[in-house]
Image (tube, rainbow, N blue to C red; front, side):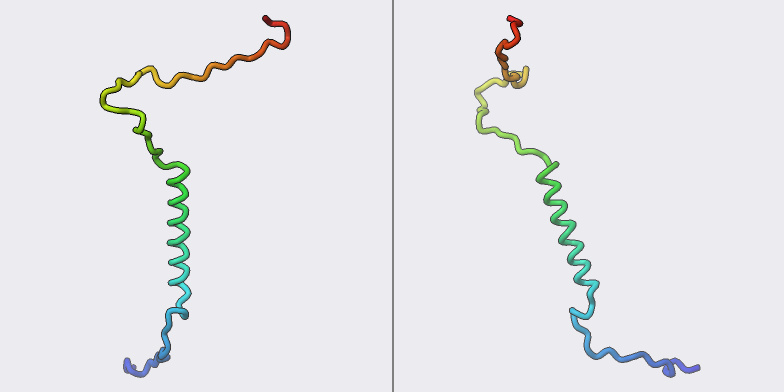
Length: 78
């Protein structure tokens, strides 16, 4: 059997729109990029504010103070 006896169809018109896989890969890449961007917004590292701190100030190591709540006594508990 000769190799030239097997004939393949000649593709004369190859266009980008004929190959839907390219668009599927681009769509997947876009979806992954949007997903990663939103993940970074939701769960990424938070920006720390350094506007209130200067090199001359000392930081209080006890951390932020919780707010003090005062509830009115409504049931005669006072």
